[in-house]
Amino acid sequence: MPELINILVIGDIIGRAGRRALSEHLPRLIDQHRIDFTVANGENLAAGFGLTRKTAEEMFALGIDVLTNGNHCWDKREFLQLIDEDSRFVRPMNFSTQAPGRGWTMRETPAGHRIAVVNLIGQVFMGPWDCPFGAADRALREIPSDVHAILVDMHAEATSEKMGMSWHLDGRASFVYGTHTHVPTCDEIIHPSGTAYQSDIGMTGSYQSIIGMKVEGALARMVSKLPQRFEAVERGATIFATKVGIDPATRRCRRIERIRVDPD
Ligand SMILES: [Fe+2]
Ligand SMILES: [Fe+2]
Image 1 (cartoon, rainbow, N blue to C red):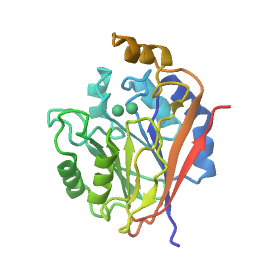
Image 2: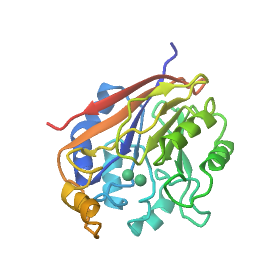
Image 3: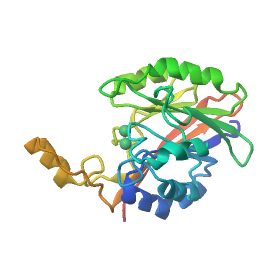
Image 4: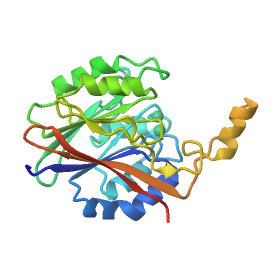
């Protein structure tokens, strides 16, 4: 077996609970699993809604290399400017052409492996975005052909659309994974042409909640159909992450493993 690049993928990090859990455990996980590169979805970092310089810097300091995004991308206005200043941030490639920032980025591991990270957003039950399949093709045309791994965060509601994307990119990307539903799925698999797939990584947030939000407000909205305030749960997060081993010579995924760390 060739020497693999070990990549840790973390899904949506929800507010303070998610950030706290990662500050307690992420440096150890990176060490213990001999991780070379870490990517996470940052759309819910700041109390569940968007991300700020402070919350993103906190995550970079813990060892996260790239933060992807989603429908909460612009919840904090400061991010409109921040994303243009720092290539560790990506937002969905199929956002409007008017949107600031970039749809893919490339970073190098300490061993010199170049990792490309693409971010896409789904159309099913979501927004009127451009076609994510065409956007994925565009990203892959733009990414230099000598990168050692290509990760694709497909931020989407419908598992069918995420699975479709994984087959669309089979043999072209190393790992296509879902974020956004905040619920982990146990369907991790490696397709015939070497692309790994998982429908959702799952949130790093409190599961004593409704997708990371306090039950009270979220449930009251469902029951009463009246507007309610959504507040992120602040403690007790479970970390869900997925580790993939990528062969840098072929960009194929050779190993995939889910990791779970429950609160103490
Ligand atoms: Fe999210
Ligand atoms: Fe989302």
